[in-house]
Length: 261
Image (cartoon, rainbow, N blue to C red; front, side, top):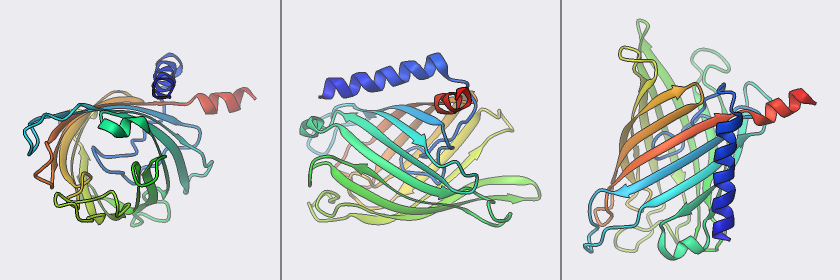
């Protein structure tokens, strides 16, 4: 089962390189937590992420490298209301690798949809696992974001929201439930250096495995292909901090299919 899931993701990744028209870049996370961005209708997003331990954990062990291959697609044909559905194949989680598939969904309203002061808004759920009380982390969230500028100088986009997950699985270092909290982010493109460069800092509360400060940058190689490098500093000091490397690619095979029809 694991091999078939991994093979399917690799085939999708290869397909996007062959058929991408490089037209609709819309990342659906920052570095670590979900953003308010939602995939546009007919656009598919492939991600390939690595999380490498930068130190040993509190037991003196170096954790395995975690890999994530994911596919997300936009499914609503509206300009002011978007929705995406997707799944991820994760490995490097020990016994949980027996259940590697996780699902996600998000619905959102883009920034400025109903006036210049209107923020981007999104609600969603991710890490919906397939094994009860083992991988069904089921993290629900709501988030808003707004780009702020002073005299035409952009200070960046600021996001804030709230999340809650499975209380049996989101535990702190003492094994107590710690399954909800706030998250926030700042992000900005840096046109002073290059339009291809983007910086981000974000925070996700709790001392479960989800809670972390994350920092990083991305470089856009084309309109639909970018790479992210970042660092995750976990709120739970028992966990080893990680370096993350991520490749994100958008492709529009679905819209091409509709046009051909």
